[in-house]
Structure formats: structure tokens, C-alpha cells
Image 1 (cartoon, rainbow, N blue to C red):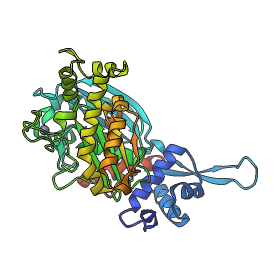
Image 2 (image 1 turned 60 degrees about the horizontal axis):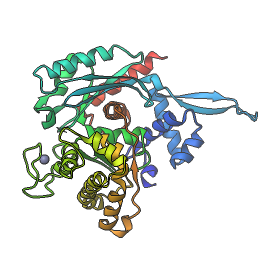
Image 3 (image 1 turned 90 degrees about the vertical axis):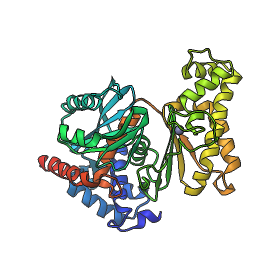
Image 4 (image 1 turned 90 degrees about the horizontal axis):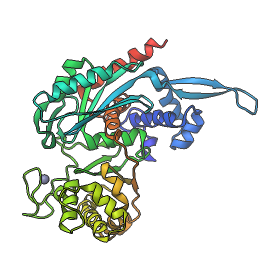
Length: 406
Ligand SMILES: [Zn+2]
């Protein structure tokens, strides 16, 4: 691939380093030749990239005698505990925290109820993070926080999130001051795209779309290896594109937004309207009903999937991604979205994009928080990352961490 042919010092180089690191994290120790073959890189590029990683103290040479005898072969392994990051997912009613090593291994998780609208919300979050940071033995590179909202600059971290009742909330500044470590704040779907890029299915895919369904609908894209943030950090905010002028009321105050038709609340509403759900029922009951084979329940999901596909088809045509990764809490019901989503896309996309891979991710409650941690863990290896002013501090911590080992 062209990106991998580039010199280490141009845009794609840092991502190549990230790919090598992620590969070693996933596969365990490997020879340079294996790395080159599996990642489709030239041996010269692998030598150059691994030399830098060894110099950084995040990869170490290991010597193993091959089982067949002969000369001992040199393998490279990740120094997984060269650094760690804590990630936090902030939702309106709870917080999930994870402690993640440089190689992506999750060391600890914690979930707690949280009222984002409370006046003391940010102090509460600070206290939660502060006590969580005490754990973990290797060096903390920083804290990543993801929010269901818009963040203009992750290294500053002012948050606009209607769901949380936050407008211009100086979250990053507050946490940096209170914790005394680098803090990056990002929109949750963008953070997830970063995690996919380093630890997940986005590996080796320079053009990627992440689509999330659940309480709302989320969209993030990676183009030519760079996460798209847009001029205000609002790239990908398709949830509040009006799909039906003067249509259903949306939580944002507008009418007819996409989210007002396919978010969790909208689906439960549609279930009640169609008579499958009773007044107090929610999405769980709708899914249970679909599981029992109730056609009206399945129809609710299928119609939502159709709307989603109609909305994203032009965007996908504009971006021409290598794959679409579907994620979010809503994937628990994806089996009822899948056929309708794929069929609608097939009818709307240009014919040469009909084979666009659509992959559905496993999902659990820590996925968002892992994304938040990935913001920090990607920083040393991704010049395209939005770590901005926090980047030198994260790098300094990584170096001080690796020096400690020798
Ligand atoms: Zn809206």
C-alpha cells in the first residue's frame, strides 16, 4: 500500500509505527521479517521503525532459540508496561473508567453512577479519576476522557454536550489542574475510531468509517490515516441532520433530526405506536419482542436501519472508506437492522461500492472508555493525533517511564 511505502518522516510514518506497535501487542513477539510480511511493509521500513521504537523504550529485542535448532533468531516484543493510560467515558447517568496498557491490555475497569447535570459533576469526576489513578504500577502517560458531545480541541477539552447539560464546560482544564497529568478530551465516537485504528479492525485500513447506534447515532471517519475533526471538532455530527423537515421533535430542540427517528427513545416510541410495547416499556422489551419473532417489532428496527442507510449512503460515497465498522450499545439488536441496512445501502451506493465491508463490533460497556484511553496511547505514535499541546508531556512521560527501566 502506498501509505506504507512512505518515508518514516512523512505523514504516514507515525501510523506505521503505531501499526507495528499494535501488531506486536496483538501477536506477541515477532521477527522483523514477520512484521514486514504481515503489515505489507518493506524490510527497510520495518528496520527503521523498530529502531525508533526500541530507542523509545516501547519495544525490546528478545532472543529465542528456534525450535529446529540453528542460530538463535531475534524477535521483537512490546514493552507493554512501558506506559498506561486511564480512559473515562462520561454518560449522563454513569461513568466508566478503564486502565489500559500500551499494548491495549485492559488492566482494570470501574463503573459508577454519575449525574452529569449536578452542579458538582466535574468535581465528582475528578474525585473518581483521582482515586482510580492510584492503582496500576507502570507509568501513567495521561488520562483520556470521552463525552457524547462536541470538543473543539482535545488538548484543551472544552465540552459542548446537550445530553450532559454542558455548554462550554472547561472539563480538560479542570481535570488537568486537579490531576496534574496530561488530559485529552474527545467526542466519544471519534475516540472509538482512534481505538479501532490502533487496537481494532481499523488496523491497516487508512480510510475508515465508524458508525454507532444506541441512545443516539454517531459517525466518525479516518481519511488517509487521519481522524477527521473538522473546523470545530464537529465532523461526523450527522445525528442532527434534518431528515424530515418539521418532523419529530429532537432532544436538541430541532425537528426532524436523524436521531429523532433512530435513537433508542425513538425506537421505543415507534414500538409503542405500533402496539408492540406498553407505555412503560423500552428498547429491551422491543428487542425481546423481536427475539420472539414479532414482525411489528422487527419492522421498527428495519425501518430505523433503512433511515440510517439512506442518511449515510451519500456520506459513504463521498468518503469511499475501506470499511464501515458498526458499534455502540445498539449493536445488541443489530441482527434486526442488518438486512435492511445492507439492502438499502446496496440500492443507494454507486455500484463499485456495493462490496463495501460492513463489520459489526463486539460491544461491551468498557468499549467507549477504551477509546478514551486510546487517545493518550496513540499520542506517541501518531503525529496526526489531536494531542496538540499535551503531546510533548505524554512523550516526556513515556521517555521517563522507559528510562526508569534501564
Ligand atoms: Zn437533533
